[in-house]
Length: 250
Image 1 (cartoon, rainbow, N blue to C red):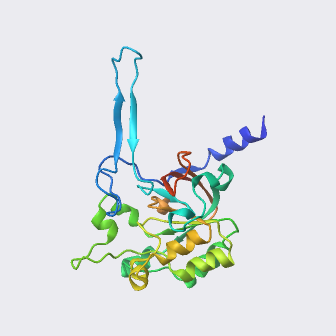
Image 2: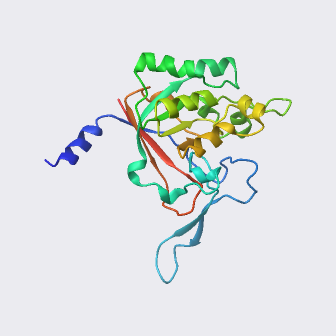
């Protein structure tokens, strides 16, 4: 038997876990994107057409819509866009850092270096080239935008996320390749509010790293040992694109 066919047969014995949200015309998106930016599966060529019996649809959406990948040019002028990445850049060892307990105590919790080191003590060092994902179980709030934002009565947003120190550790010490999370933004809302900017997201993209936002099902993936795959339409010039993301796990 051919080597890769045998490897695929072996891989299919593991669990293949969907990590991306399903999208429709009612799916939420960032409030800064104008209304009318989403129009999915609109029929432009329908059954009964005399030229050809088939159906064709059009799709209109912002790049940062649903589970999506961000490229460096999203926040940093002149940095790489979608066409800079090949298929070999989109497969990663997956490390899932669980901060659900901390997030229940503090909706605006920012993961710490100590949290990352505690993960490494249990599961081993984060390998070079890894995708490091934060598990908060926040994905269970989809598709309620107010719940995803942690909207309080005073109008403030409250959701967990990354700290600058934790990101610097995974990228500058552990040499990770990408990061991801279940929330709307990279930064914990408290970090963003204190800085008046999405400083963590800006840092990640300035390092020419990739990130995926609005992941789901991290609670059913092994914390270490899984593989994550990201795919998206091959559209040139994109600063971000909706992504189909999955993990192969034990």
